[in-house]
Structures are given as C-alpha cells and as structure tokens.
Image 1 (spheres, rainbow, N blue to C red):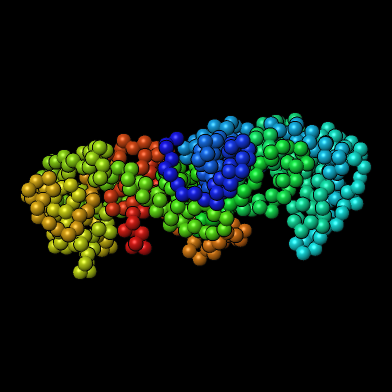
Image 2: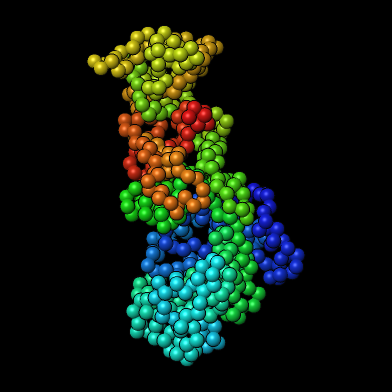
Length: 554
C-alpha cells in the first residue's frame, strides 16, 4: 500500500486517544472490517473500510478482515472473493488476519447453551406474526411470550434437537431473556438462533441452525481481541445488545463499539438489497456495470483507488448523517486523473475534413506529448494527412460571434499541427453536413517558426487513414434529477426514478492509432472531451468523468 498522507483527526480517534490515555487495552488498537458476503462492496462500505484500516494504521495496530457469514441464504464465495479483491485494490491489507463468523459457530453454540442453562435464553415458538404483536411499539412496551418461563432443561433439550434437524424452519427460535419492557426494542428478548436448512458456502450442510448477526458479531469481535468495534450509525441502537452479549458471555476487556455516520451519496442507491434488485431484474448488466456504486463497477469505469480514498477524506468522518454530492466524488476522480492520465485524441461524432492543398499520399509525423505537465511520461507519434476527422460539434455553419471553433471562412489550429481554414461545406441530399473542404497553412506547423501565427481555437483531430474505431459508453447517475436526495432514498420506489439517460452508447467513434495499444483498465484523457477507460468488453472506452469545462457547460 502506498504511504498514506497525514489526514485530519476525527471524533473516533479522539475517543481512542482517551482510551489510550486511560491505559485501556494495554495501549493496543485492534480493529476489524466485517462485511457480509451477500453482495459486492459499494462506495458506502469504503467509508467503513477506510475507518477500520486507517484507524489501525494510525495507532500502529492491526485490522482483521472478518466475513460475517451468518445468513447462508444470500451468501456466496463469489462475494467473498470479490470483497477481498476490492480491499486489495483500494490498497488495504488485513494484517490482523482473515476470519469468518462461521469458524466460531461451535463456540457460539456453546455460549448459547450456557445462556439457556443460566436462565438468560429460552426456546420460543411464537409465529413471526405473533412475535411482531408481542414486541410492542416505540411507545408501548412488549409483553412476555407464553414460553418465556419454559424450564431451562426443556429449552436446552429442544435447542439440541433443533441442531439435530428434528424440526422444520420456523418451528422454534432461541431468544435472549432480557426485558420486554425495555425502551430499546432491540433489547426485547431478541432472537439469537433460527432454523435454516440452507447450504453454507463454507460449512456446507453441517449446520441447520444459525446464529443471528447481533449474537455472532460481538462474539467474533471478542474472540479476536478487537479493542474498538467501529460501525455505522444504524447500529447505535444495537450497542446495548452488543454490550449485553459480550458481558453475559464472560469476555474480559470487551470491545468498545463506536458508531459513525454512514456515507450517503446523491442520485444513487446505497443498499445491497436494492443493488441486487437492479442486477437480478436486468436494469443493469451486472454488479460491475459502470453505473453501479459498487467498487468493482467503479474500477471497471476507471475510478482510481487514490481518488476514492481522497473522496472519503474530503467527505469526512462524523457522527451526524449527511448526504454527499456525487459532484465531490467526480471532482476527486477528475483531480487524480488530471495528474496521472496520459492524453490522447479521439472523436466521438466524427466529421470528415479534407485538406485540398495537401497531397493524397503525403503523411507527416506529429510528435504529441503524453502529458503537458509531466515530460517524464514521454511522447507518442501520430500521422497527419490529407483526410482528417474532427468532432462534429467543433463546426458550426451559422456560428455566433464568440464561437472560436471551425466555421465557414474561419481558421483553427489542429493540435500539434497546422492552422486550417474552412473553404467549403459539403452536404448530403438531406442537407446534413458530411464533409468540410479546408486549406492548410503550410507555414504554420506548431513545431516551426510558423507557430507564431495565432488563432483563437485549437481542435483535436484524428488521421482518417489511421483511425481506430471504438465504442464509447457515456454515463450519468442512476437516479434522475427529480430523485429525492436523502438517506432514505433506497427505501422509496427508486425504480420509478431511474435515469433513462444513465447509459448512452456511441458506435463509430474514432481514436488515434496510439489507442490500439490500450490495455483493459488503461485510462486516458481524450483531449477536450473527458477521461476514458478501456473496458474489457471489446474495444470499448467508458467515460470515467467529464472535464471541468464540460461540467460548467451543463
């Protein structure tokens, strides 16, 4: 991992400083990143990842990677491998070790039996509907289940029979015995175990009962010696249950749970459940569709790890929920690619230009810089000839006064080459402009004394004989402008607000010959157009983000 730059402190680190000053945990800081392998990571998870790994790094500690795989119905080894790849891509490593909640199943089961024996858990047989009825509301307390006082011996027998597979799903559950009148609904005898005849991606069919996340998670933290359990704000109301579990299970020096606001981003959905719906119902091509907020999609689109980490730092770590504008993420990507992406010439909507005073069989080699600010990035060659292609929007037949691109009788310089003048416009039978007949000022090459002659416009171009055809895919946010941008966006009917212009496919684009060497994942700034990344799906370039001036035009 590249050496991280110094970042400003935050309230989490202030709290950890207090713990260290008080001599807690022997001066150690040990964190963990605990994704559930039921989908691919998205940009929201990056904030949690950043907090967990950077906190450990800041204090000279270590961070574990632990997959909280307690729901076999939705988990898969594909997601495990994808998450590991995403973490590595962002430059983090799990120096504390790789773990799975499933490796603690036996220990969780032993602790559950102990709770039953001590009267702190019981086997219940309320139906889900009855559970909701008995649970109460935010303003009214719940009421005890008729089976809450079931003898411990009977609960223990049934629990063991549940493990042995003697009962169907839904017949019994194991509940903690805490307080049905608690103002915190999470403490009203929460479920600890349920029956599920689902094959697990690691344990196969060994188990048919599975611990709930709120039971297995704190146990995993405690067993791994985690000092600070850092999680998003949605788990704040679960903290009393977290503390109850590690306390009644007898763990000394239990982890301290600290919550921070999750990352909410405008014009997208930030829920794996709804992202899964987009994939399964065919609204996108897959988890790595470049319109998705998943890390694998951002990687495919051309976002860089440095830009994403910069975005998390700029967005900040706080306790208060907020919504971050997508423009900030795009700005971080643009800043990074502006420094690192080589320049190339391409036209998305080609318009033919013929230089009438240039011989058909004559070609001149033009030397182009790969980056104007980084000569160490080198140069590449392009051929200049009689027939060229320019961007269609760079010509206007009836141009306004301040239009400094090509127009009838007007002059522009072609990047790295000559000044040309438009003499004649050729149209087809429908009146569409199909070709421009131009004259080159042969004394005006940018690499000669003739470069002293100035014109206001400079255009990019592609030699028609060397042009490399490609498909360009242009992206906009998933949700349209009318989308209500708040943290609950994924709880609403987001499908009706999907942006119909989120993907535009352009065929027949043309790039300079140098682009033939592009490998999958290579990023370029297409001059005057935007930043693009070579896609694995054929000779396709995804637009990563537009240029600043393009953003202003909109």
